[in-house]
Image (cartoon, rainbow, N blue to C red; front, side):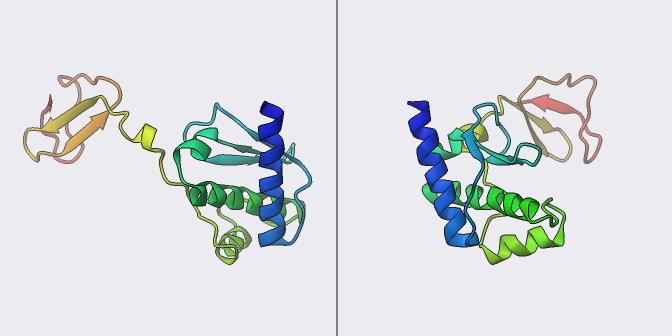
Length: 150
């Protein structure tokens, strides 16, 4: 079953490569369940594109296609021997030319991970944290006021 999904994924990536870059995608593309903070990544040493499967299931097709186009920008620039990193001008130009996103939007499932909310007693600044913090040890980063748990 996974090979069927990977074949369909390869066909999708190759068709997007032909449509937007007019060059076939000739290497490996896989789903990587371990990706958490990103929609995908390009590994230059292996010429492999890894995609986060959560973006395929939780987000709309437009967002997932945008992630694939972004990774294809890395891929095609690397193959051509040009600047393929995020800070390179050639990469930024190709993103604009292909209408690819610079960053992916956060997953809905990751948005509500904050279990602990702290407020500053002075300036009322709100801090959302996944882990518990020691309110006796830490203060507000804005005004140095005391924090308390909501």
